[in-house]
Image (cartoon, rainbow, N blue to C red; front, top):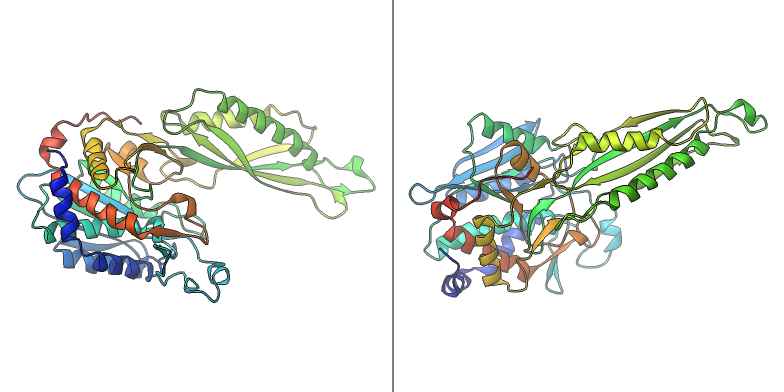
Length: 428
């Protein structure tokens, strides 16, 4: 089954734009900074119940921090489609000061200015979550019912930046529920990170490394008694940059580009003394098919090859474990999967300028589904990642409304015949 202009026209005519915008404004108006997702989860649970979903469940993945899920049954013996995204947002520090005296002063107002809704979480990724809910509602308004069972799962703890949070605790709990049989096992998934309605079947992997270089401090007048950690750091930095150049010289991935190591921080030194300790922070990008363990081995070998003075010790810490103890693994599904093609058809029929196949310039939680469960998963939603996590976060209202129509068209045509033509191989 394909997406035709008649279907898109029918859906556009049935769309209640005002109700869809109101839904997004309520979502943005419910703060859900990482660690404080409960109120937004409850709102989503209410919306799922109003949609007619069964088994609507709020389940804590940490005390007072629930995931929310619900199942909307399709017609007949259809496949299971997972629509998922994270409920938490980054902080709002500096927002009110940036927009003081304007209608955008509150990060939770959902003010519409110049055709865009502004506020924390608009793009990352409440527009995506609301797109899924509004698309299911639109199907009903248009007199249509999906063949697939629609599993909605909105999970917390994706964003990093808040102390003690942001370690993907929400999706770890959700994946465990699937593995335990408490939740239906999806046949395909869309994770609604912002893509400007393009489709991302591949994403980078990453690791964050803190390198501690320890020497011995000494009074500046007697430097010969010390071992200069800052001087050793200079040598280590040079080795890291050489290693990055070697990574960048590898063949690029068609969608994700080239790997690299980026130094993001340098701390060291003190007051009129030989620096006894220095710390270098970096982030390393991996391509699909590359191993985090191999990346760590290569990085540490490069650093230890740096010429440093006797008495210098070097240690490594990896503080950002996600689906791997030391970071986030890269992932990829074949872009020629029939489900990917159907999603692209739906977007192109709605927005001919979108629907491009691209690589995610970020890491999010699809690898939990792809690599751990073998569920083909793509990122797709309205919103632009370039303004997310900033004081300029917004989503273009027309893009959001077009996304609802496109998702509804996809849901109307996603059935077992589409699934039967999927190449089930998953590239880890």
